[in-house]
Image (cartoon, rainbow, N blue to C red; front, side, top):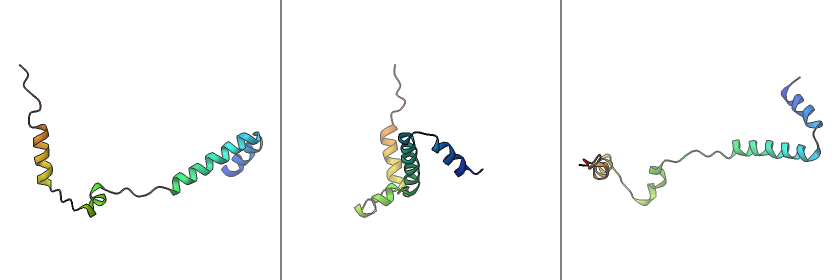
Length: 74
């Protein structure tokens, strides 16, 4: 017996409201699979805004943020 046949057999023994729940669940599974969109990097999102952040800019920001970490607490 195939999986489809096993599911159909078990489904036949459920009350109508439970069968509807199963149908809703199966439909939600197929929607999740179909609605996956590829992720876009932040660089791609900001491409039309004219930002040009270099590795040096990132390194400078990191030095400014973390320059005093860890602090010497005496």
